Image 1: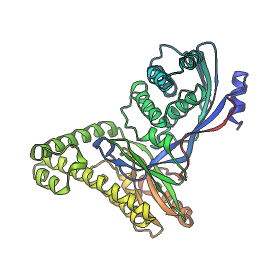
Image 2 (image 1 turned 45 degrees about the vertical axis):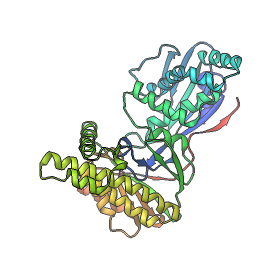
Image 3 (image 1 turned 30 degrees about the vertical axis):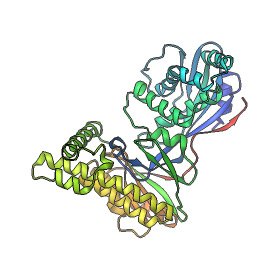
Image 4 (image 1 turned 90 degrees about the vertical axis):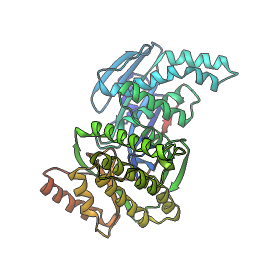
Length: 407
């Protein structure tokens, strides 16, 4: 395959100003608690989106998706969601730059001439080639990686002086407005802030974050992809949110000082929600999982700080049990994959990752045993589930960054 800089030159007959890479992400622990004011523990991985970009002067955006062999050209102004899905991840962040021009101007206060030049340059448009190796539909956030890559590139190309957190929030808004997905901030945050061999504890309430060492040593992170996506996912996600809100409200009636789930103890969940009533019992199960998982994540980072990966792995198994039995967002394929490795001495931990009802399990497996376990699991998955298993061995890498640039 030709280098992306060469492909850019071939398409546009001039040289790219810079090349940017933006990774996908995993979440080690802390699932379904981002919207419940909890904590997540993501990390950037070695699967990425890569782009080459250069300025134009004709007020247009020329976009080439190399993997798809598609080219789309649009005027840079008056952007609206496009029928071609991948285009929205690019133009959505362009729209965000226009929306945030006042704050960009404030960042450059005292240098109005510089801001005027930036605005004039940006109005000229740009050319972009994009490609990647993040598996689609595996829950590794390929869309967020595209948005972060484009925004990071625009920030560098036009000297917008945006911080990584500003870019993460803008990319999230772009996903809401142009892709129509009401996602949390974790995916964009992790793609931009990732550091090699480190996990990031993100407080989904305050957006404060702390890096923790991920000392894998003789172990690898392996993703087993069920290669299924159940139609249940979006409707059940909304139901879970509603059930959590109901539970929180009931607890707040008895304990008025409680603001969010992180203020709630398991004793309070038992006292307020444990019931023989079928509807109330579902609310109880959801809230019990959320409170346990918030506590589990905070204990898990203590394991990382001590380098105790065995204790960390046990918590991954506990999380899966909670997601499967209490939160009920797993499925037979995910449960099968976790159960199959649960008693293997070479596997420290495993759980479903992401929204549920399909997607991947994340596993911490001894490097020397990866091939044997993968071979056996692939055969058993085909035999029991009549499906092909996809396998991704990942490493923890840096977040969005410039690969090379000339500007």
